[in-house]
Length: 252
Image 1 (tube, one colour):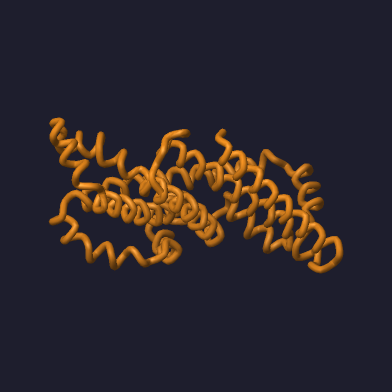
Image 2: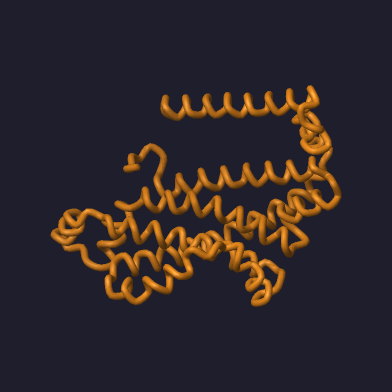
């Protein structure tokens, strides 16, 4: 871990500690009703008493949906972005349809997804994948469109053409764009997941949030939200490390 990374980690820990302290003080001094926002100590006590076998099942189901939807949507978006970014004629043909579909939020597709695929995992994977698809497509296309032509000419001077040129020169050169797309996709995937599970599911973290709200169990709601935040953060870090290995420089 570099000095800058250590400083960022320490600063982040201080920020979290300050947030928790303000939260605890607000509840302790009755500035916020504990029935609406339980104290950190109450949440910790509840965490220690949870039936983690049951909660773990919900976590595992949600994680499977996010990973599968993210992979399918992300890979499809990457491939389509490469094709459109590299082929100007294909970009002209597909530009208008994609621009019409791109602004539609993934959540708007949930009713149709339920009609098409039912309330099972397929509808949730579809909604998650759709959001990730457009994010990765946009960032991949932008990266290829803005890529330095001199580097392409240099690659061709070494005998690289077509797929080899894309794999060995262009894709490594646009990794910062891919990293941004993957990071945004991770956040969007969890947002889409929770919305889909809130509307139609009997398992998953979104379902725990809905059940907690209906039961007036706001502690469970906050625990489920915290688990989503932790999973999203860990998955985002893993994706970033996969695209840009640790210690390797990249342009911002």
